[in-house]
Length: 275
Image (cartoon, rainbow, N blue to C red):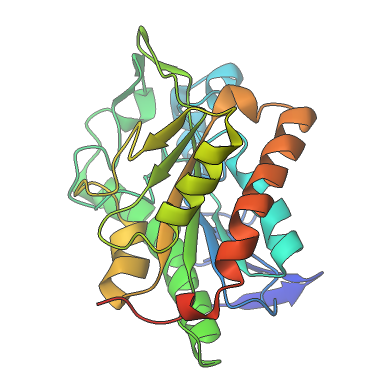
């Protein structure tokens, strides 16, 4: 893999992949690769980009700007947290509709034919060969980069907490979602428990404990593969998208996340394996 480091972050792609051409973005972006903090942020749904060869999957620009294509606000909050904590972050380079980097490859939701009522023309009845091209071009490079960054931090002698940043739509179908933020976790609550305590004590937030999704679900990929399987401290954050859709919201929620994470990440007992 060719890797180029410039301007404080690493861009890396697979120029030889049949799916990606020279005008396509890289399959992932690494922010702050030499960050001093032994913490790694991941953003699986950071981008709404589609490889040019897939012709926007037959979707309109408005659809690609919507929540079906990416986690609105998640990438920008990730960037700001990476900068504040001086920690590396890895962001996926392509839309979840190309292939979902937070789904097992054999999951029915790995390549969606319909998302929240929107048919995805370019995903209808794709062949195994087409799916394999997307996997090799977009899925594996991102996860290989994430693993390399995490292992690089771990080589310094600490077990790095893995913080996964996501966002969710305020309604799914006709069902409103009341939570302002969801904290997803499975067996390791070293980050989730004190973070939820902080959020609850603020008194101004509706906090979801494994809502609107659960990290105990077998569908997710990043948390079990990059964190739980290695005993690394972990949490997945879900921010409601209408709250991070503009600069004021982004600034507010970045501040809330910083205030919540600072005492947790300052505890040196956190940096060890679980179980």
